[in-house]
Amino acid sequence: MSVARVWGDDPKKVWRVARPIVQPITLALAPAAAYGVERIPRDRGAVLAANHFSGIDHPLIGSFVPGVTYFLAKSELFKIPILGPILASMGVISIRRGESDRDALRRSREVVRDGHLVCVHIEGTRQRLGYPGPVHTGGLMIAMQEGAPVVPLGLDTFGWSPSNRRLCALVFGEPLELDGLPRNRAGYTEAGELVRTEIVRLWRLAAEAAAAGLPPELPDGTPRNAPVSD
Image (cartoon, rainbow, N blue to C red; front, side):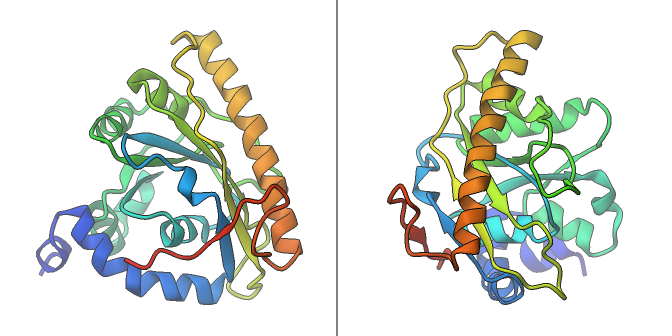
């Protein structure tokens, strides 16, 4: 029996079933807190631009962000039996890394246009040095071409593994409106610099929060968010 027949083909329904299963496992493996989740617009589509250190990043984001998050994930994952169909049923968008994938960009733009949240790990791959890396502008093009905001997200998950269940933290920034920039190489480059600067700032806040034992609020007063309960 196919995954689609068991879980259905509506991502909302699939998330409603999957989150109560995945979330407690995720937070047992990676004790974590999020800050600033309320900054994500709920009345329009947006792009969530996050740095990327660990395989736990996607489950952590899904544990704290309400509703459906449409992740972009490398196409190789969709070739894995069972996992591939599950990812597709959750609305995950397949993207071919290292090349221009117009189908993935078109699908992502449609999702944002329909008022949903697309999450892009903006560096394109995991960073191995413990510091956010250079920004790839493809994810920003999605937002700029749709006139949608970019919500920067700083993740501190570096060094996490199932055998090193360190504290992790997520800090969401204020939405960035980039539609005033030109839709050309210069404009995308400027957008990348703006977003990366903010992600680095948020990542530092996340690292400080994890080192401090996940306090109830950040130094700027941003309160800690509870995991999603729906």
